[in-house]
Image (cartoon, rainbow over all chains, first blue to last red; front, top):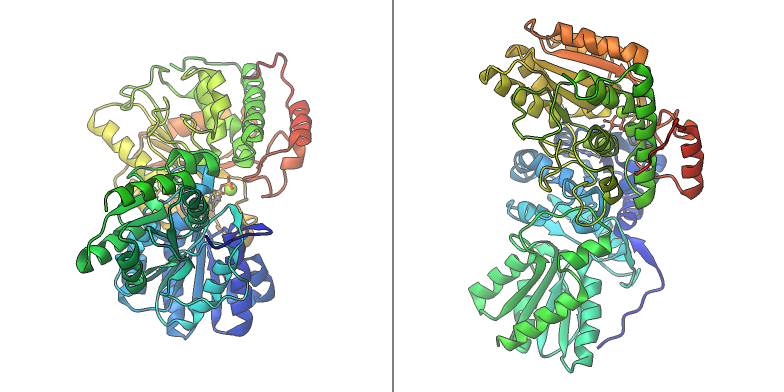
Length: 317
Length: 285
Ligand SMILES: Cc1ncc(C[n+]2csc(CCOP(=O)(O)OP(=O)(O)O)c2C)c(N)n1
Ligand SMILES: [Mg+2]
């Protein structure tokens, strides 16, 4: 198993904030919009350096999406910032009609996604956002795994013409991807080559997949681990190539098992070459209040859950 | 009849106890929203210990009772404390706030079945619609009790509030008393800096509401205003109270800015806060 280490933990939302500042410096068309969560989204540095390109919208997410869509008409590249729940479910039709169907170049940047938002509870912990967003024709859906990758993704999406949903989170997590990585939308990242089972993970579950890979190795199981930061368009080629070698698959995500990464991978497999697949995901329920670690444990999103799923997938070959 | 019907002196003592609960609850889990909770304590205590007619044997439909909805769900600590102290559940349960497997979720929910809560809130802007709907259901049921709802002032930036406001006037929903917690603060700063709300009285009046103003941190002023609001119901218009409060009221270092909207005091700050929130005979959970 390839060795992965980290020297610090950071929140992915800070990767977004720092990436936004950098892309703001590179590209004068980048504008930021925020709905009364500037601190939580780490957009303060951008606001400070580019006050004339930052728009405080107040607590009015539907308006924010509409404003962003309008600004693209003048050639601007709007990055909207609020929590994942208020970035998607709250404004689904505004995104659907004014952004996706209208083909507008809006970057919907969503923090505090999933269970790891913690104590605020289920009203804020969206577990359905990947599904909602990936169902929209033309939408790109990205869920990076650590600070560096989130920063790189934030910068890269400015170069992509079209709507993007960029999903990140609240807690501090290990920073293990290289700081100088190039972020390629739609290109899976091979973390470890293996032969017995493929583990495809996204977001916060990527680090847990690495931990699971080590445990599996001690058990004599060789896991191939892939970081799939882009859920749509899915790198189906990477998925199929890996499963052709390992013969089975585990998907891991901080999302409902319905409609997320797992279903995208299952569709890729079923329509090409079916193989046993196990899901590590929330089992069709809402979340609740608790610490991030407690919640990941209770809802079955730990490295041990990935290990158990891998063993089960292998047994079904 | 209100099951407690406390005197002003008793209301003050209860409010101090509730404020103690609030700071202890958010301190215990190092998360939650003390600012708005402390500011709205006197309002909640007035409703549950004097003004509203209800039973602590909670039923979802609340037939023949006044109902309360909290739209700005982040101030759950004050509501939970008041519900417990009013008799809906044991005050010991306040110790489970925001912890795993608790009925006292970060934001109020019906999902875990907490008595007193009739709809989930936390995602802002939705509570007025629900309250208007419940008020209309009361009318259909020939139930002449009232529906109360509290909203934040920052929350008024959500468009759905104004959809509900227009609807309530159009449909003459006059068994409804909505209150705005006008503390002038939200997350990113003052409402004036973030999104100027302008003249709220004129806006709601233009939408067809009967509008009153009240001092929300002074029982001598608040109770008569709540009486006036009640007297204004049944006259063809929904009733709104613009209630001036101070975010963090009662704890000096939490007052005067938006900073304590959603952070918890540390050990030392908790001690200072509890000293400032003295009660004759504290009965902390
Ligand atoms: C739809 C929605 N958008 C954003 C948030 C995040 N949020 C929680 S409280 C808050 C500020 C609310 O301001 P106000 O209503 O004035 O409450 P106060 O800060 O005075 O307690 C925001 C933006 C939310 N909970 N719901
Ligand atoms: Mg306010």
